[in-house]
Image (cartoon, rainbow, N blue to C red):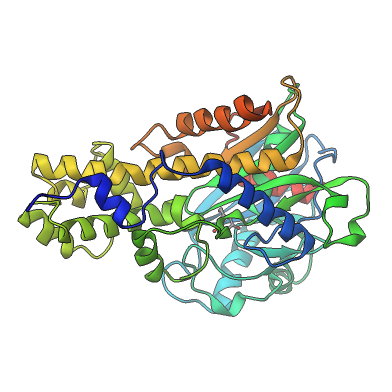
Length: 430
Ligand code: BGC
């Protein structure tokens, strides 16, 4: 029997490759979901008004104690402006190593803030909280649901700022999403550059974008008035007007929030390894690997994105054994495994670009090349992926979709170190 080609195998499983993705159709449906979300109509994009603008004056010389919770670790530190971080400490995020209750959850953050007590000039605390949460006018955050596999069900539906401050015996805290914080951090460090608008973008364990919207377009919030603008946290990882392949579906079914975060699960670090594993298992059944490799892959329970990526890049990380190097020790198997794996990263890069282009277009700015829309990107998947030149692919796609086709100008700004913490401090100071 003739072996299937990689192309046939991917197509038969509904995997749309980077070359085949319909960028224009996706852009249209992204923007339509944004508009529905802003009107309060049913949409896969939450489009959360944050009540944070981009025009406040940040007091030079001030410092704030901040928390940053959004992945497998959480951090506490003191941030001063111009951005400088001190007293930084990293520890596991509560709920990443088994289920936790309220006391354990808030207790960890309260203890960290106690450690930082008296070390900052600003009385208000800052908290970068990177999960889908509704924002209140006084910058508290009501957790809608967990993403990234956090197991702390008691916290869902709570105002996390209010609950944390109760445990600290009072005080004030400003909570922002990491996309909002990243946007603010880049705005605060732009120097003498001129930008017409801003997009804050994270592609790490999860993904999401925030941008600046005119208040009059936030129809679901009539109180915002006709003038001015504010940052919208889109929760774009929830976008679901896109077809999943059989591999995406199989991986999703095994995740702790099955059915949610469809777009995030196609591009973010928590999931790419899982997609790779499903591809390899299915390919093994199709006879695309040697018997030995097929048997080994059938017995593999999980695949971390870092190992999947390093393997596809043929990069051996010093001090880290990669399970795929052992499974695909045979040169033909390794070649096949890379041909099957690299399309996952290529698809992620093109989808990243489509999604960024949608926000740049929605901002309504960028017509003047001397005042482009700034995109502030942060996150390990964006900057550390090795399998393909991720950033270069995103820029090439943005040039095509925005500059060539629409005459809309963008600039990916230099990365700001510790942007989520810097942005959380700015939110506390404004
Ligand atoms: C969360 C967002 C967050 C993003 C990036 C997603 O899983 O829902 O709130 O901004 O990850 O960290």
